[in-house]
Length: 111
Image 1 (tube, rainbow, N blue to C red):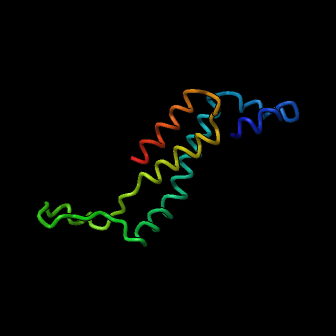
Image 2 (image 1 turned 60 degrees about the vertical axis):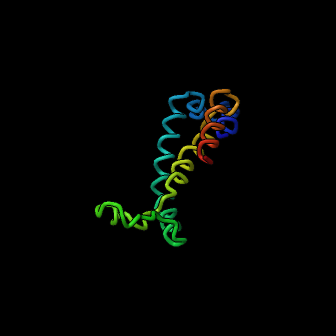
Image 3 (image 1 turned 45 degrees about the vertical axis):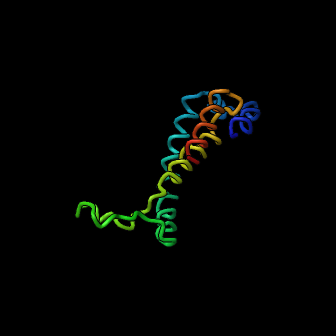
């Protein structure tokens, strides 16, 4: 999305020429995914604990597993957010491979 917004502005401000390189966009996507997971992660974990969405441990299981009781089990929400948002921001959405990856990621995330 940012590619389509910033690429026409290359003539106005030449440093925006970096947006056309896939290495720059992939690096920025990786950095933004890391920042998203660091900033949003604690908030999501707090909300999951608040709504008591946690791991249920069977009493017949090993004693070492009892300490996992109450651990939030919806960490995939954080992973999907950290992957999909940077891809939507920095990817060229007209690329068929990006479209396939987005559809597959969303589909598997629902499963």
